[in-house]
Image 1 (cartoon, one colour):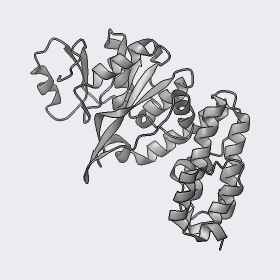
Image 2 (tube, helix red, strand yellow):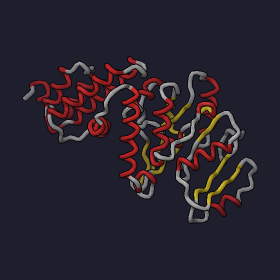
Image 3 (cartoon, one colour):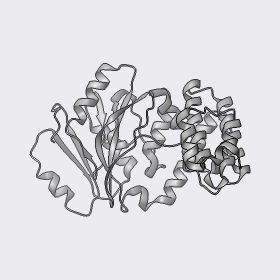
Image 4 (cartoon, helix red, strand yellow):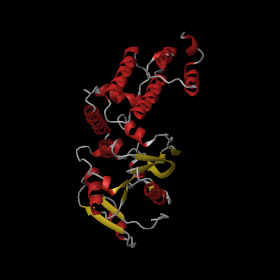
Length: 302
């Protein structure tokens, strides 16, 4: 309610809460606030889609109950979409609040086509930072629940182009009672299904276990597993008929660099595997990072 952009309606949906949320909502007298409540919990995807159905607006912005929007959030994002007809949605960087305090989410310098390509591997969009054109919205799928936002972005792109703002416009709470933490097993299963649908759209028979490792690469991998990862990434590039080819290649080149860098138990040999790879783009900055990780042995291979 502290937004500098004042021409909005706030649709608050109480999803069968067991605290005083509903009573507190009724105490809000601002006419821009419209409240809806379910007597029993219906789940994130169902309730968010219900809230959208009640909205009468050009743009949709989301904010989960435990997150906070900066006062300029709506004004900045409305201005962005008003001036960028090529974008269907805009998201921002976020502050992350957990038990250790507040930290700023690392900013990813991703162009819209690179956002689409990144979603092939992981969700790079903070839901509570999203503003999307109403005409671009599609209902979320209830069978995905804990990862319904990721499934929707992956389904809409690359036709839907996301802009990412460097400024942190929301504070995201990361805590043990959060939905993704409480249902971690279901989250892993849902992400696997999202990966599968995207890869099958490319005409690939998914290697889901390997693909799921790419964005959280373990340090204790074998040379064979590293080789499998390189081959799989090259297969994705060859199969691509959907994503902007240069953007997909840039995303995969960066991912491959991070994978080799994170294979630190393999020692300097991981660097030499990277250097000889067709996926490698050995910039001075990347060379320095390899030297910091493996020391001068990276130059000798010993």
